[in-house]
Length: 351
Image (cartoon, rainbow, N blue to C red; front, top):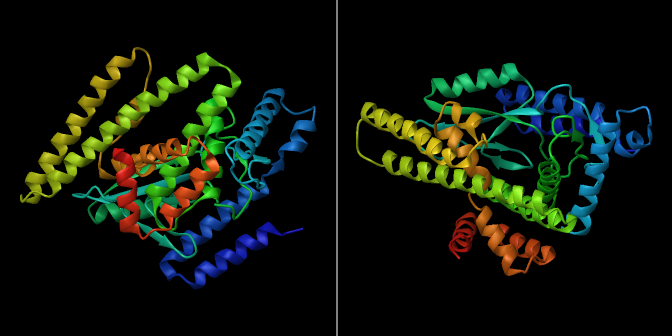
């Protein structure tokens, strides 16, 4: 039997040898958090057979098993040990992720790691370390945003569990999570957060629509499509706001004047969202997200997940929803040098 705890510790040790002293605490807390998750895992098959377990939990875990089978058989996603185990973390999130961006830039800060490359966010189990790192960025004049992350992929390093943080989600959202995270195990391009997250989000969206269509539940499919259409409108608004801010930051003006102009644009963004939200009747939409401090980092966190979704959906459509061919073409694009990759995705986006 493979000793997973030993693997985690050995990997952490290797990373520490490649890192400076300032990174040691970060990698230690990452390994400790992952070990805690591993220690809490129980096979789903075992839980399903245990009649003393909460019937509602068992019913949700059965749904996860169905989603996983659909992902493997219909979406052609990898058959690994992920989502065959369950873990209760006794909190409503897995990690807290930090996003940071300069005060006058829409480009997110990048953190780089041995083995997995760079990413535009950093996950923390240690909330004290997170607070310290966020304060450091703020003292350097960065905008920051902290997101509560309900689940994440270890990219096949470990068997990712189903967590209590998501188990009560409605079927479309829970299925989408399974499809999204398994997509990361299918294709991951080192150092390109936008490519990776947009790819996984596209697989998620296409997969959920296909699953709902096969269920024959037209009402649920219609509700999901309405939700997606509204999400798309919000993402388009955020992208437009970022584009306008990017144009502002290129202007020749002193810092005080630019800071004032930035604040005016961000306040206008809130008003533009409320105007959009007013068309949705009783749907709360994204009220909670827009209620927080609006800044470059918060806006960038959405862009990282959605900037190239339409491009990937276009690619999938070109392959007539043949997922094997879609993955092959996506992998070819992913293998391009970053400038060529961005150019290719941009061409798909305008098709």
